[in-house]
Image (cartoon, rainbow, N blue to C red; front, side, top):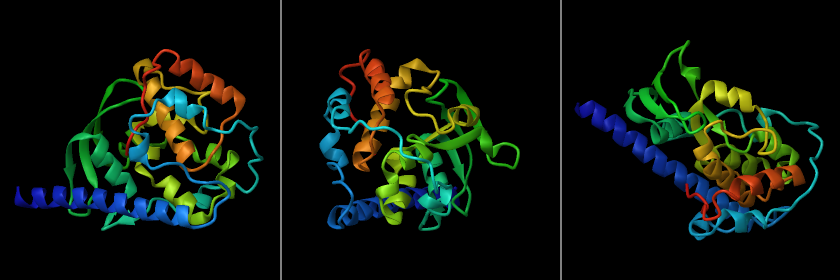
Length: 233
């Protein structure tokens, strides 16, 4: 039991460390000349309405997908204090988690925000993919809507930012693929307002834009929840 406590404490420390790393990266993004100005801090957005923030996003067409690859956003997950981003997000989003000595979440329960179902997660070759970590703004979508103009360090920060990441049902994540709000929304309708608000938050933070079809879809979702506020990490 003592070992379990120490492992859980390690993961909590790693989550805090990841937050520090992201914050430091944001500070570097602000101090380093960038294609556009990075948006306000997350805490400044906390009480702001998503419908208001949506109007801050530029509306443009998709840029070509030329040269896109996952490696443009780093070689997989980053590691902080021995814990990689995947396991940090699993520990944040799952309940009743079990963590091994290598900081891997080996079991837990997910109230899936995309489908509304409860998933019993168990780490293993045949079962780990049942729960996947989704980039709320798909990385290829980000690439075509401004991320090409970011530095590599900024793109790595984006791909590992807790604001951008959710533990979700694996099949639902595969179905989403690289879709934006105009082509894919969670089947669990009560989560759609939060989902769109999180996409807006990510796009503002990293100076990304939306297409007109995407903005229209977001407006339609938010019309049912005009008091939806922006998320915090």
